[in-house]
Image (cartoon, rainbow, N blue to C red; front, top):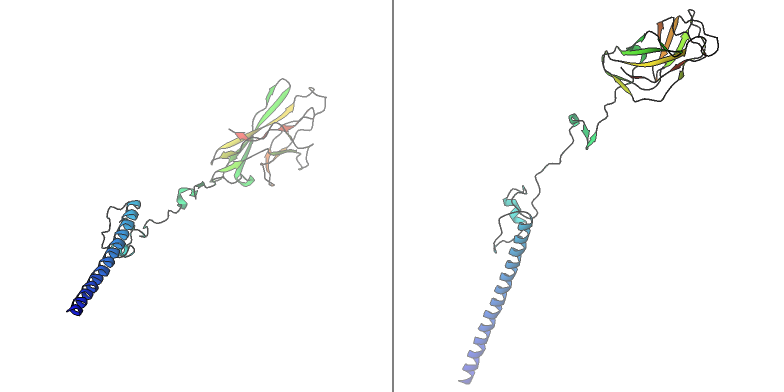
Length: 235
């Protein structure tokens, strides 16, 4: 009888042990599921999603395939569908930087030349030298022209004009527009008595050009060893 009782008590303890082990395993499984759910909920809140996976979620990554991976469901690890923004070549920018729009330099072959009437005053004589854009597009003049006086046979009369005044900003010339510089000399007798011979041709190098323009002109007659030219300016 006592043996039967001991056997019964041992069987009961074994059954209790089994039930206790199963209970512990169940509690651990529930704790792990709750932890997974908490992590998923935290990630969903951080990504702006509204859906929180329930305790039965088996994988965080697995839920992204159900949303199509468009990054709009708030699922952790879901890739973004936004494409990188590229600069538009037609917008005039390259990575936010302005594109250069500088016009080409005005060359002699696209310019017209004219010389205005003398403007005398206080012993000085000034002439308006004008360059006009005859080309089909906008071009730029920057700096001082080169100016020489020529005799009928092409020989140079005296020294070329020296620069007077400061450098000015570049002048953009649309087709048909012009820019001008001022030639300056003195009246006879203001400074000494010598004057150069009257020219037959005026030879002009546009700023930055190695090619020249010529104009038939009998002026200016340089006196007092004074012959200067200013930088090109609008007008």
